[in-house]
Structure formats: C-alpha cells, structure tokens
Amino acid sequence: MDINLSDKYYLAEGSCRTVYRHPNNQELCIKINHNPEKDRNITEVVFYKKHYKQSLDFITNFAGTVETNLGKGVVTKIVLDHDGSVSKSLEDYMEERTITLRQALSYITDLKDKVFKYGVLLHDDGIQNILMRKNADGTLTPVLVDGFGPRDMTVKALIYMVLRPLAKHKSAKVLDNMSKRASLFNARLSTLNPLS
Image 1 (cartoon, rainbow, N blue to C red):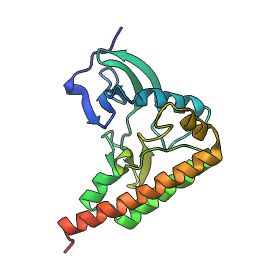
Image 2 (cartoon, rainbow, N blue to C red):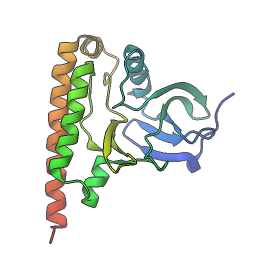
Image 3 (cartoon, one colour):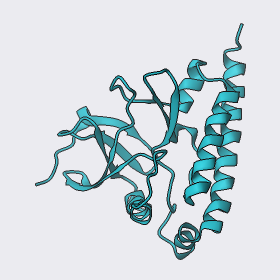
Image 4 (tube, rainbow, N blue to C red):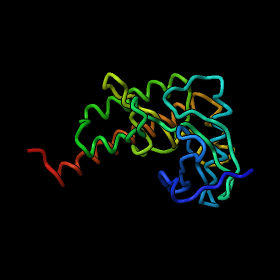
C-alpha cells in the first residue's frame, strides 16, 4: 500500500529532491525525487548498499525504500536533538552566531577524518547538508544528510565510489570547498550584520 504524502508533511527541498516527514513514524523522513534528469534516490541507495556493513554515525541512517503517491522514496532517520526536536544545520547555527567560523571549520575537519577513515565518496559541498545533533550535555555532533555517494550513475562515478583512493581524492576537494563555503558565508554574515 502506498504512503500518502502531502504538504503537511513537508520538511525541506533541494535541487533534486523534496523531503517529507514519514506519516507513520515521526523519526523517519522520505526523500522524493522531483528532478527527472537526476535521480538522487538511486545513487543514494547504491551508496547505502556499498557501506551497509559499516557503522557510519556521521551519515543519516538508511531505513529502506517505500512507494508513495508521489513516487518511490528513500527512507532515512531524521537527525534529532536529545529533546526530540529536528536538528538545525551548521548554516543555521552560523547564521544565529552560536557557532563561530573556527568551530564550523573544526566540525568540517571532524567529518573529513571520518570520511577518509571509511572511504566515503562525497559530491556536494553545501554546508546546509550538515545537521548538528545537540546532545544532552550541550555538545554538537555533525551528521551529513545529503551529498554523499556518486552524483550520477555513471561508470566514472561508480569507480570513484568503489576505489578508496579515488573516493578520498574527490571527497577531499568537496570538504575543502565546504570549508571555503563556510568562510564565505561567515564573511557575508559579518558584512550584513557585524558583531558589536
């Protein structure tokens, strides 16, 4: 039986997918592809299948696929704070000025260490893809919710995902660009709203 999604379950939208809260489970979300030229759901499932034996605590957990009234969706766990609220992005925290640029770059470095350790291929350098899970002690843990795995289902992209040295090389560039994006975002914030 298909799951019926509507605007009341809407969470977020990217260039290729729309994300909805799962109607039957508040801890899950469903990603629906809306770009017929780029099916990110297929590439994400390929990524999860490759890494299913690894405990990737820095990437949102995969919970399968599901048929919906809007098409087939990828189901993942929502990144939640210790109090059950949906975690905010690194970009959100920077905009609120509760995370400094130095702290943001440190979180990206933490992700880099884990990405290299597990040979994870990244393709998107957007800092909005990093959600910051707030723990009971007030610390924050970065979790990637998008931008991992091959960008497209091409032979080259799949080779990059399978061969760890190539994945590491590609991901290093993506993570360096994330740091640059964070720096540019911080500079723009400082121009628009300088700290007193």
